[in-house]
Length: 209
Image 1 (cartoon, helix red, strand yellow):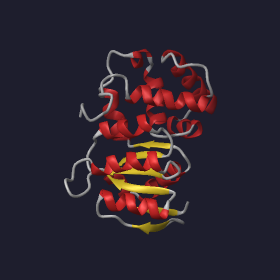
Image 2: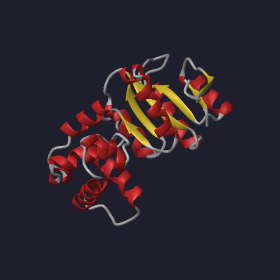
Image 3: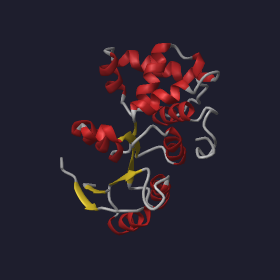
Image 4: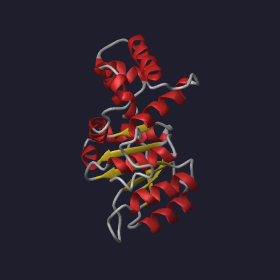
């Protein structure tokens, strides 16, 4: 499929971890809920994968918006991770685009997850942002590049850069390299105190499925 080869399929979290250990794939596509309990086995396995095999990117799939799982994954490792609703998989082009961005070390969040997180973030530094800056931060959280944000909002790349610099300033982010500050901005967006510290207390051409 679009240059990807499925190295293995796994029916539960233990089989998933065994398959990743054996094949060391470029990316693992993981269901949040896996047998036997059908609760959070998938996301817990994803956290193990990111810790034990950091070169394997992880794309989590979920039936519903459960943003605490996205927070769990992103606060542990901010590159090469994604969280999408299963309905996105129906759009093959969007799914392949997400795979490629995650495999390349990017972060991909489902727009529905981002929207719900925005609703939870009242009375914090994010309140300093203008509506346009919130739009830009939302697209950053979805994993979009500056040029991708510019195309989505129909503005110039320089306008996007100015908005992002303003976001960094208003969120009191340190003047380090731009890529790192992007990650910090997204993490501030995800973890500004409305999701528990653990998330649970408040609710290369290969792949593993």
